[in-house]
Image (cartoon, rainbow, N blue to C red; front, side, top):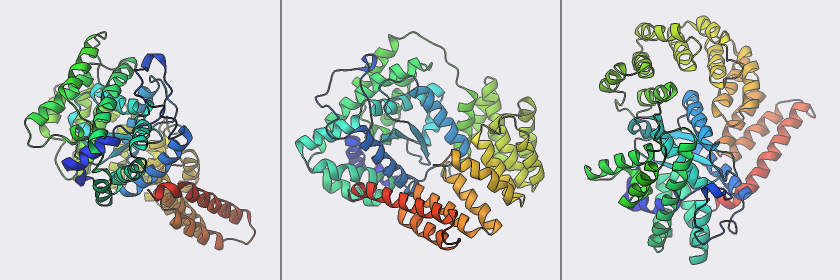
Length: 487
């Protein structure tokens, strides 16, 4: 979906703001660098940044090829939370998203939202390398680089920054519309913004490598991953997209290597979760390309215990993808026997059960999971198994709790809508679909669905009052978002 971002001109323009793009911070002495000549606060408050982030993440959900895989979402958010807990100047919550995109890239934007392209799992050989990219993006946020860029452009070209911001964020979600707007808006101010962004990149490297080390990862992973990018560009007619949106002159690599060399050497082993996430991403979300290769699985099979398990898990994934459920079950069984409570294994075992129409086995497997109460991945799996097993009432009970605790997860609302429809609860089905529409930025449709739901229940009832109150909330949200929708 983001293929047009591959164009050199466009990518260079996005470098100007998108990857300078980021949020909040107040400076802690440990992460403070020389001020770049702007307060970053006179343009946007933290509250405004979070509100804009809420608006744009809804657009992203509605238009980008997000990977809504509960296991992968949980993994990248847990990894991100570990890094954020060791960052300074954190002024917003952070949320991490994974996009199905074979171009190597990552970016951050308002509200502490960080987006990773799935291609990162193809290029990152270790968890420290993946974490180095995330630490860099987190540092863009904590140093408020987007607010700084906006302040700089407002001073130099008062009208340009407004159109540029809207165009760049539109390009994330809708490349065709965004590209045309970008080209016209930024043609006259491109060079000044590029040099500003290079300073942002250097600052994000310096702060990011500190975050990386404090989080227990190998600081050498940052210059190591940069070197991979440069090596790839040397032997390619076109550099990786990440180099177009994150300028990487040799000086950046040298500086990162020098800083890493001054830090205490550490030996860091990648977690089993990293290998499982890599196998799952390459095996299930690869845009039709065979990225979970036999060579990779063979290499893992000769590696440490974590890699060996990932090799077996990857082969089981491949067998399930080919609907060879018996082979998938055979490959997975030793992993289940060794660790029957592992959510990666339980999720795949459940999918195999459902593929074989063994819904009772799937339901019982999940109901007996020790971590069912606390793990949203297992809860979603169980709700889905209930639906496959013709037990929508049990699914509704579970999903009502799930959506209360995970209001921003479209998976939960979608399953709840299906379950309510199966029970013939038309108004509650419409209400669940309305929540989903709101999460993907379609507030008009959400209001329409809730209005229909309200008309189907008893006049003056508590349920009608609840629907009408939610309609009012969505209308207020529309008003708050109106300025951004005009950018």
